[in-house]
Length: 75
Image (cartoon, rainbow, N blue to C red):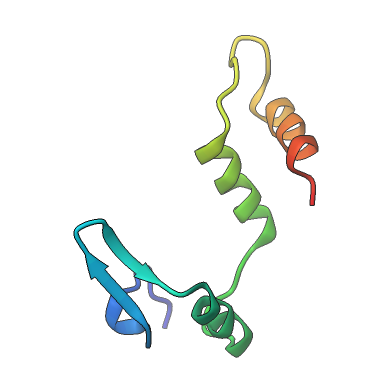
């Protein structure tokens, strides 16, 4: 079964306060190592591009802008 949403109750360590809901990065990494969560590097890069980068759509195509972004943040 594939689920499309997670809840605070899915985590062992979480906090909810007026600023939001928080979980530990260490627990996420443990869940990835355990195989509960899977990360797609391409999708993660696209998410970062779409949520962090603004570009002039009259000058660059999305792919050109993504290539520029990738050159800026290459790991």
